Length: 291
View 1 (cartoon, helix red, strand yellow):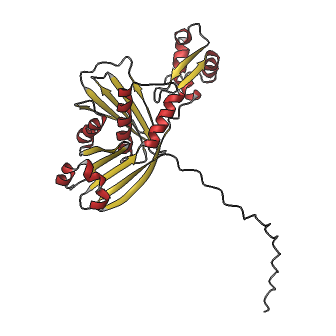
View 2 (cartoon, one colour; view 1 turned 30 degrees about the horizontal axis):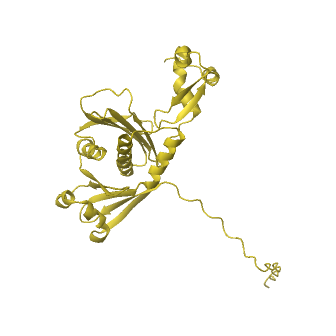
């Protein structure tokens, strides 16, 4: 049996002088704040840490776009709560949707935070008007997995510090201790104990010790996640929220005005809704008969 002849390779056109082959396209930048989880060997603890600069910038851009200017003391509380919440979210399974509501009695302030862990997205807002007195500081945690009912837990905490609130949540609700540290202007660390944790080491941790942890301890990378600011609210969802009130009493919504401004209950984004748009939505989405 003879070999088939190999076809000749056609000549390639020469590259003009000064030109070069086209470069591959530049990959898009990776968005979000990287959060890293490490297991601390021999200590039986997990350390979760991040630099929150990018997420804080996204938060401020969101505020500016929606003309929201919280007082400085409220703003710092929100950023601390956001950091603690994101670190906590990184310790949770990817199947969960979670939310925290923190009530600060002395400040008469509520902070709401929500995360879609599968999408690595987070959002939230401040409530400073018409806050109800509750005689104590509270943290409410809501967890949803798939179509299962919401699981809610509630704890009290002693002071106005969101990081201490998160530590109280771990002790009272998660049934294991966790500690939060600010090791740089926007560098936050969470250390969470596991069974057989070296409690003497855990209790003695300091900011200085955490800054040198990569040198003094053996760390095993568990996971990287990248959290970004994203609520997902849009005109369609806002119309759906307003539809029941529109069916019941349109005058209470609009009065004599052709439109109204609505703030998203999750992130405070501003949405302008016209009477015409809401009437059309209600006509296309009739109320369901009660079962």
